[in-house]
Image (cartoon, rainbow, N blue to C red; front, side, top):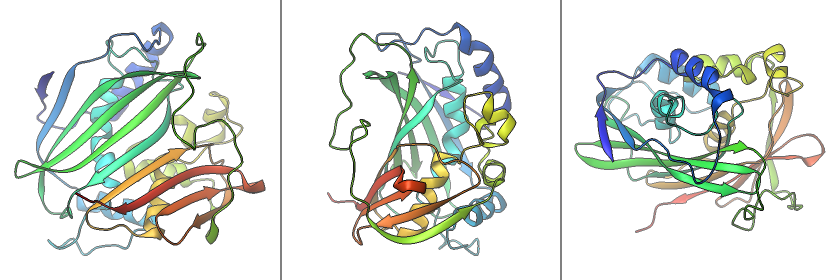
Length: 291
């Protein structure tokens, strides 16, 4: 795999525009080739004002921007998102960016991440896999400090298309609609219709499906939907996370805005988000990282 070193994070808007223009010409397939470059951004420092805005919108306790303040466990995903979009909007990425669905994320945080630290950020496409509804790509984001790997995520993104009998998704919580007993409700949150715009301003992810009802309807949604990564972050802010932690989350159904959702937990590691009629939007688990 070829490492491509960047001098600055790429701008999101051009990547989104290129990806949108190229989407109609993509032919998704799990056997397709994919970009082999590993994008690397050295000397990364966090914009503390932007971090504070992210903490407010997601419900994390605000820090005082001192050396002891740590990044929220989900924040490196925000830092890596522009690099991921550059890869996924490229001509050599076989899945169309328009309509691509974030289906899961797994996070490993090996230690606390000081907000004022200096990091090396890297993003790569790990591969493609068949999914019963199309083709799924895995994107890996890595954060290093002083040469040591301190944080990593693996996100899966689904491009829906006709398949020739692709295998069922793995795991007991496969996306097949089986009923799942609700966890004990620990909080109910009323989500305003501008949540997508406010999270988009804090995170940089201004996908039109999250911003306004009109732009969301262009992609088949009756109203704007909440960012999946906001739902994970909000649940983890309520749940709490060990310094060395492992997180797994799966996105089950979109959260329409405005709306009301219920945060549930088993009091240990499992958490979920449900909407009206007990509709399951998100399932996840968090726990300490064991050797």
